[in-house]
Image 1 (tube, rainbow, N blue to C red):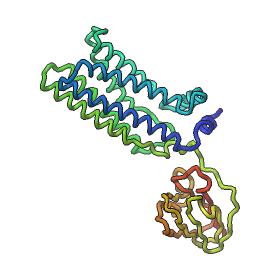
Image 2 (cartoon, helix red, strand yellow; image 1 turned 180 degrees about the vertical axis):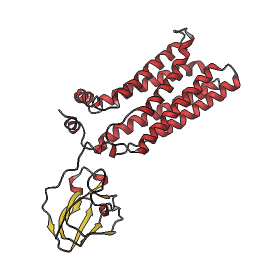
Image 3 (spheres, rainbow, N blue to C red; image 1 turned 60 degrees about the vertical axis):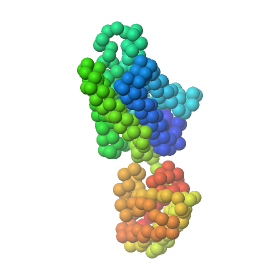
Length: 318
């Protein structure tokens, strides 16, 4: 099976893949916020021994949940196909490295605070995990189509991970109560900031839309001569395909209270006929688009980009 065939067998739309990415980021954000709070409490001396054990346990638990969700989000019967698909994406190897850092770093940390490992170098495993994961966040590639804002987000996220790791490293190296407290407060605050970024993270749907090409509608075009009208309804575009003479105009009329983002083809770049990038209309609002030259111009609802009912073509003839 090709990559597109595997994706089609597992997911109905780009939003399905978007949701998985969102949950993965959001889940990590929640657990990291809890870790930041526990680190802060331990830094102030509150149940320090118990919390020192709890932090690596929580992170190992979260990594286990993440891996289970990652491979079994489409059900046990499709887990093998999910695994085959995941390994076709360029970022998977970086995520494997992140998972390895997480498991090794926090396992060593747990054994160190439990007194099972006596080597003082083991104290560097936990801060090294933050630094390593941060560096990989900055460097890792992305499959699909990610905009610069998304790449910038991960660069900032990675930088905050690195800063957290450095502060924890300072906390463990400097034996001065005031400096230790300042370092752990900074580390906790930085970790809270990056966890807040992860909790509110929403993957751009365009990131995966490249794997779900817009399908052309097979509905015949209705000839409307000089003036055409297309109604934007809850059930789709009415009519979907029309013909008009060159120099004619088409009125897009919103008759639905829901949101619809009318865009030009070709998805996802929307550059086929820019005047069709109408955007959002209010219920009862009309937008006129003039077509001075002949051609076939596609349009679709960007919010329902894979639903053929919300797609159409305007054929302009001389």
